Image (cartoon, rainbow, N blue to C red; front, side, top):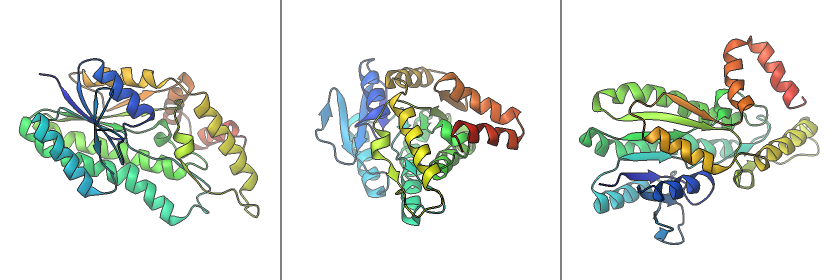
Length: 267
């Protein structure tokens, strides 16, 4: 029987690329978005799901299970970006991105685990970010949400081991997607003490996304992870220096690593 996959945030970017790639490799794929245009898009069954609204998660998972009777994989991809000086970012926006990137992901996991435990099989892949391995200037809240999801995954793996349910993270670096357009950007305020540094850093971040990797690379990695009998705790996908930056953080004294980041962002 074809393996059944649920992918959140599958209407664009990395999620859409993964969904289409898996359909082309004979997986049965259910993708989600808050407002899907069609119930079937290029072979992907689309479900309405907003990770910040638990009732929509319940309905979407129930719909999938009624149709397929099982769920083999969950790819937690739905998320949003946020930028801004920590001091000036509205609390409402900070909470909103945590509700999406962290608490929303946890709610979807909780919805699929009873089925996976009953099956005594299944895999959850949480899409985190290389940014989640370090506190980045003017992206601190985003880094925190992804870092939290990575740490939670580590704990979940051990709790789920006896049920033969696997969990891992895949952390992308910069990919050519529309994430920059969908981010919440704290406004660059004329009277802000952070004005110049934030403005320059924002331009640099957008440039990195524009020059990012092809999402097809991420899709191939996801498939490889799915087909692994013993997935690693964490995977990183990005340009060499992005991946190497994680190793440097482990090796260098904290203040040295901080200086590297300051130089990188021209701060």
